Image (tube, rainbow, N blue to C red):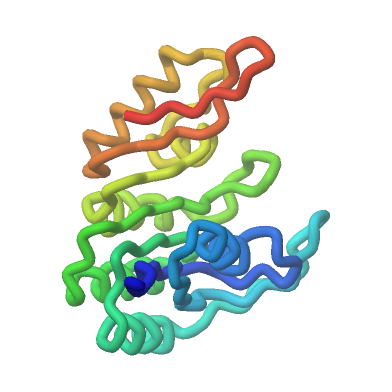
Length: 192
């Protein structure tokens, strides 16, 4: 019997368990891959609100990343909640140092209402440091708008959503899965 593929998530810890590395690890287990994690932040949150966030020091985040990749390696890496310029830079440097080729970037940039959660430098650094490493970028339409400095198109404006995905590809992501479109009663995700 062959060993399962090893996949690394670099994300925040959601105390409610609905998002972040807890959700990633459940998804990995459901897919039959061996999940590993690098914690970027610890949150106090539930289904209603985020009450507190504590970011881990960049040196500790990088040490976790180095320890995991040096010993286990990873068939793929997924990034999630980074939120701080110094964490984006540390994660990017680590991924490059370990020559990670299959990087999925989930640009966690907006809250559940679509409002930006971070200062403009955060999406700027994601564009500069992580999009060029991404084999797949997975924004929702609000996150895509933040990355592109543009207003989000209507969920049913599929032509504008497709152009938005192509614009993100031009920023360096090899493929883009733009989530959250709608066509009538159907939800539409666009893959470019």
